Image (cartoon, rainbow, N blue to C red; front, top):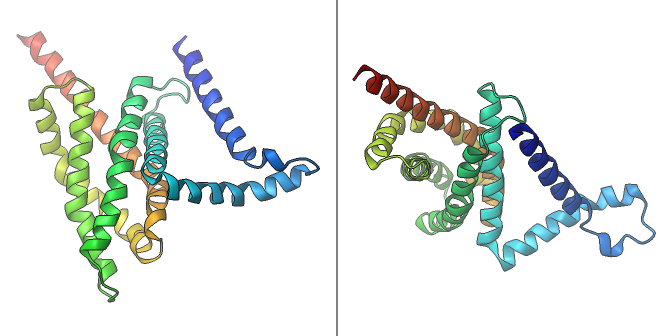
Length: 232
């Protein structure tokens, strides 16, 4: 039953997404060939995305991050050994909720703040932004991520704090293996308004790591508590 529900959700979401992307020019389709529809769809979807960034940038970035964090958790579950359509829906929803409510909106303002913090054009600005991102911002975001996920699991503050304490430094150093190189592109090439889209593409890898690590810790704590109560 659960597998059937998951399959229906994935197929419905995929159908809606593909239809939305391919029907961007439906008002002008008359006389178009399939080749023309497919040819212009990427360009016109990009134009539509840029328009949304101008009219409602925060909501657009929230939606992108919500999708990426949901997909990232799904990928993490598959990586952990679960069959493709036997994923934990609640866990995917939690991750997507964090991406939608926090990552998209906070990142929008963070990148603007970062530009204001380093309003220079010198050669050292990009390395400085990367260093700031991978220390101060990573520490803030990883802490927020694990705090909110823990609260959404209805864990006690003590458990949440314990998870943050054990994951803080390992996740910071793990990020150094992925993000510095990616962020040379983020801060050196990508315009400010487009940065979150680029970062979210890389986030698919990072969210998989975050989600896997977080849930491994949560499951380990649950097993430890169960064993403790059994011994008592």
